[in-house]
Image 1 (spheres, rainbow, N blue to C red):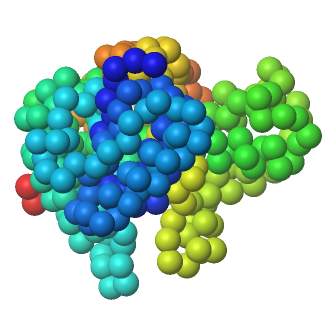
Image 2: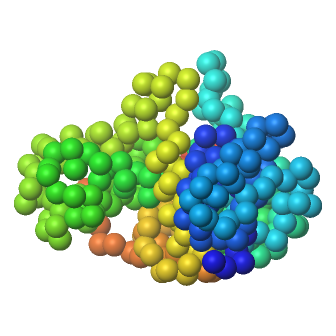
Length: 312
């Protein structure tokens, strides 16, 4: 056990799942939850704390009733934002959540000067850009969670077709979080061997389509919500890599400054995570088709970023 403190803004399904996962991992001394709904955040803190005791974890779980109590965090995860509602345009959603992100960052940053931020709010890549724009922090300190989730979805669909254990399956996804993500079949493997040795081109393409639609499929089935177990646990893996300084490589949404040939745009790429945030961007050799797909993904993200810049 160390003295690390994790702050989570938003005690909805994703934030609560994340807190539950971290508390049971016993990798930080304290988790503090913050949410506008005081009764909900207090209830979540109590429930998760009691679960941690059942797991013999010594992690303290509390809630912040004011901003001063949400201070001196080593890692802060922001899940705050609203879902898209009927009649709401994409730009309406984007600008509403950008305002929420800017407000949250401006409120908590003065009390958390050394924190590393993980953004989970959607539209993910644009929210990472917004968070960076609202602060003077180095780009290594603000990281978006999406690639870990998208890769886990791809791994799930690969395992559906094969009999190998999850430990033997490696899936790789980069690009924006959404329809324009770029699943990398040639960097995905099974038992250390190329995916093409086990699956046909048609089967791989079907897996890629399922991966892109993985979140939408859950939204359709739930009807009144979206995924939270996989996003929450994927975020926990990132937090753990930072707290333990493990140097794990995960696909994350970060600001590119020349990497992959792009400047001043956020996109999902493989990065090495450690105590200082993302410590290195791993540049993979992409084939021409992947370069074209990544360019298309970047273009979609730029549209969102331009809307933000034109309205803020």
